[in-house]
Image (cartoon, rainbow, N blue to C red; front, top):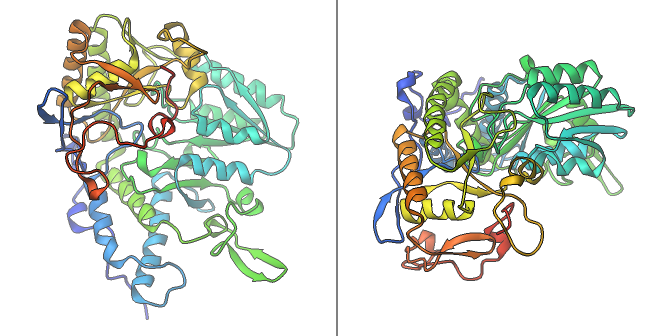
Length: 484
């Protein structure tokens, strides 16, 4: 007898006919959030920090809410809820694979995030592999490869130089295997990398290509087969599904031959007192109870973006990007950072400095005085920031500093009104200076004093509490932060 699940993780309200471009921005959880200012007012929150963690799509939350009553163990449970959950997990794997254009023979491994996925791939590399990457990469696409033989190329001055440098480096690789690990879009400047050309160069030299798509996937359509990439990693929290899911998609031979990423239940076929027969395919690297909610939320985000159309997403962001870059050029003292110049194609990420202002003060004042969330620091890309902003780094005392900057980033939930509020606030800040005092605490600038009341979230923050939460360490506050 054939079986059809009685639950669909795609709630009816989240499966309309594909909307037109005019339907953007899409509804996101927190889109109507109000936040306090240090001056006592309450204002609508403007989130321009999508590149760090994008808000949850309303359609994703609906899917998770639909799933949770059915949530149960996967793969071996006899209960009906377990059967349904197992089918949902498999359906989510197919959905995510389809979203990135996975080939029929590719393996789709659910992970925690991009960092986890790239570490998994690094652990599975065959012996005698040389990895080639660039100094412009996020730390997640630099540090895992340092455990083996690796070549780090300097920050290229153009896309053409990136292709030429990769070609030269791979031509000189004498190891049995080669891997070119490169980002799809810079998390610092938003600039798009020439992936098809890099993949062609790598394959001509007998190497494979791994793409860090953490920033690319929320902004552009991806087709692994058309790109010629061999592996791809992305994060749910960048893709409007902040439930702890990520994915590594790619060719299964290295993954099947590599040591299982985690040793434990689910990754085995058979265990004896003195031996183990490991599973192949995705289960080999998914030991333990998987994050079904993270996988389903990631799949729901992929489906929602697929229905709106990634071309519509790109067009929406291009309009916002044009407004942001034009507006920043009109603000005195603002310098936008780029590897390859202002005309290089990019996603909705813009990084800048303001002459005479520490980036931490700019970010803190935008938040505390205007209710606008941006990010400052070095964005987990220290070598790139040193190359881009070294000559414009704020003066510091005591030791070498990692240069910092301010980053605004946006996506499908961003409106033109959000962008205009940011530009107006920055113009006011540059013209008049901060209206509040700020001090450095744990590597970041914070209001002094900070009278903003915190919400009593599940009792974790006591209602009415103001200022910093006691007991936080500097490492809790400012990972990958530029030194102040």
